[in-house]
Length: 258
Image 1 (cartoon, rainbow, N blue to C red):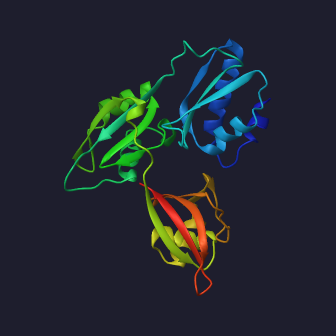
Image 2: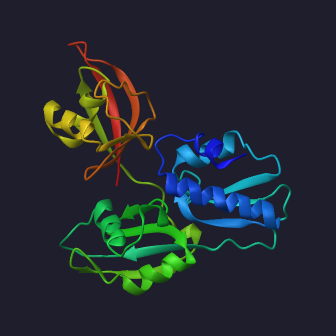
Image 3: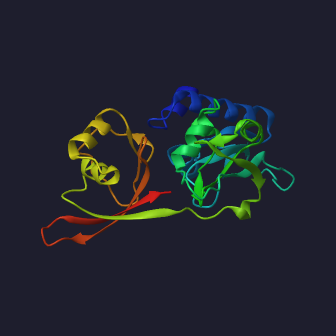
């Protein structure tokens, strides 16, 4: 498979990221040995490789923070390679900002990490619990975070490597609401507590992703289990439709990742 054909398999993904993945695939083919990518990829990359591997002589392994993780590191290897003696260059870690007076959000941790000059894809999912953020990354990236990350929003932070079994499950805030339709502008309005016009502005300005794909169509109709990412507002799961109200509006359940 050539590079152009490979890139065409994916939608709305940074070509630079995919080009690096393709180079790692070629390297694994050349040396007949596993190659670890340096990034954590969204589902619309790794699921395509998992569901329909286009490389007959290779296989892919995907490592995330837990079994429900969305962002996963990819390891490329020759088919039937014995992984018993292969130790992936993966670090699980926590960033402890325990504080009685100030509560931090997902965006606080992520924004501070990216201010170190790291790309979003350099770490996996972030799980937040009691002002402690848990994540997964590669060894070189962890060294940077451990050395450079001193505080988040003026709160001192302690960075520590941990075992995978210390990672808590994903945490959600349930949002029950009633909407006139399952259109994107209506859902974004409820996720953000903004007016419909303000929600449309976010969508048309490229601030909204559905399942990690940029959507600028305000009339886009969501389906259950879609993931909505709204820049500066967070990530949401459209969990389910729960019937109709007396005024014939849709009663739905959204879940905000926290």
